[in-house]
Length: 88
Image (cartoon, rainbow, N blue to C red; front, side, top):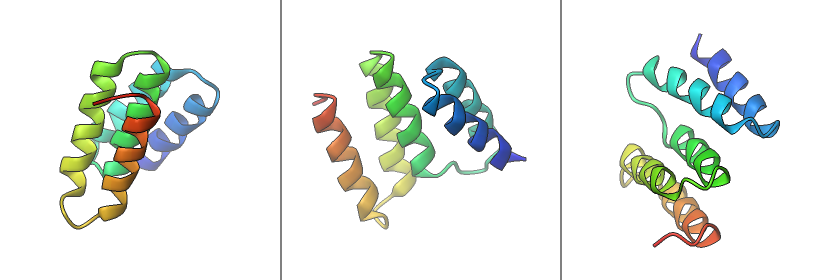
């Protein structure tokens, strides 16, 4: 069940086990036909915590693509994260 993978990923992220969280987010994404934007945002936060800005930036770009034009909150959250992590 994809919800279990997402829950485990969130738990690992809160425990600061970022590589483990990223593995679980990846499994969750594979189980979904179209992963939601928030999954990519959470993954980006893990990448940034690991100082992998390139993968974090790509995850934020994926969040914007997943959200499309209909989810304006995602665009503002992505902008906030880019500012927080000093990403262009």
